[in-house]
Amino acid sequence: MGISKSPIFVPGVWGPYYSAMVPDLWLNEGGQSATGKLIEHVVKSHAAFPELESNAKASGKNVYMYLNCHLESIKKCSAVGMLTVDLHVWPDFHGNRSPFADSTLKGMITGLALSNSLDDLAKLYLATVQAIALGTRHILETMQNAGHQINTLFMCGGLSKNLLFVQMHSDISGMPIVLAEEVESVLVGAAILGAYASGDFKSIQEAMERMGKIGKIIYPDLEQKRYYDSKYKVFLKLVDHQREYRTIMQNI
Image (cartoon, rainbow, N blue to C red):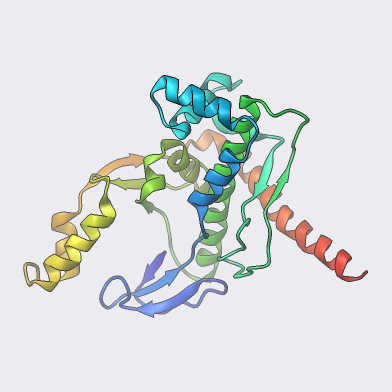
C-alpha cells in the first residue's frame, strides 16, 4: 500500500482512496491474490509432500519451518536464495491483481527437472516465495514510477511469521521490513480503531503511536542485489512470453 498527502493515480493499482486508512491521507492499494494458498498448493501438490509431512511431524516443526531448515542444509553457498538460479516462477496461478489487473494471466514455472525429491520440493517452494516477492517489487516499482516514495515495508499477518518469506521480500525489494512487536498485529489494528472511536485518543495517529510497537527490523542482504536484479529481469520476461504465446494461439 502507498499513502500520500495528495492523490496519485497508478494504473493497475486500486485507488486513490481518501481517508480510507488514515484520516486526511490518500491510499493506493496494490496486492496479489491468494499468495498463502499458492504456496500451499505448490507444496501439497508435489510428489514429495508425504515425505515432507512425515519428516516435519517427526521433527516437531510445521512443513514450512521444516522446508526453511532443509533449504539451509542443501545450500551450496552462503545464500539460500541462489538455489533457484535455474528455477523461475510467475505466481499468477489465480490471475494478476496488481499491477496488470488481468484475471486471465496464468502461473508459469521454468527450470523443472525429471526428479521429484524433497530437495526439488524445497527449491520449488523457495522459487514460489521469491516469485511472490518479485511480484511485490513489481507493484512497488509501478507505484514509485507514478510518484509514490516508498523506502520501508511493514509486514503483518500469517506470512510475516515465516522468516524466509520476510527475508526474501527484503532482499528482493532492497528495503528494510518492519515487523510489529505483537504477532497478531491485525487484532491490534482493530483495537486501535476501537480506542479512537471510544474517545481514548484524539486521533488514529495518536492511538497508533501509543498502542503499536515495532518489533524486529529485517534488512536486505545487499550482496545479493545483482542476483535478484537478474531474477527480476527473468520474472518480467515470463509474463511477456506468456502474452506472446497467447497471441500465437489466438492466430490459429
